[in-house]
Length: 91
Image (tube, rainbow, N blue to C red; front, side, top):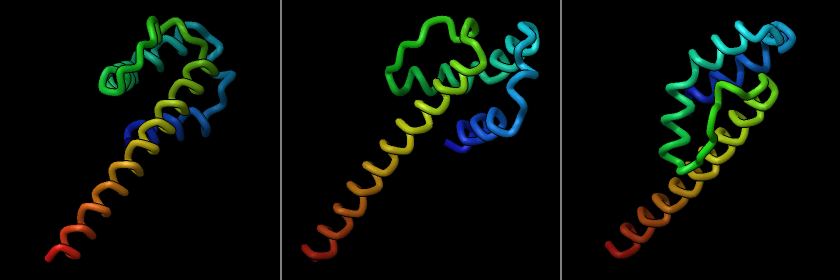
């Protein structure tokens, strides 16, 4: 989640017109590809040909992944807290 947040922050802070150049866009997305594809695989999200996305589409995809990860984390955290409460109540 930290790596995804870092990518999203980079995309937000940097000027997106700098990535209009195909070579720069390709190199940037390619440098983040391992993180994004690994996370997509774990979440069972099939996004073919990430390298062909425009920088705005890539940014939106990263935002969507971040939101999904955040929601799942909150859900698991809530389940964990519920289990802990049940454990102490039963004790």
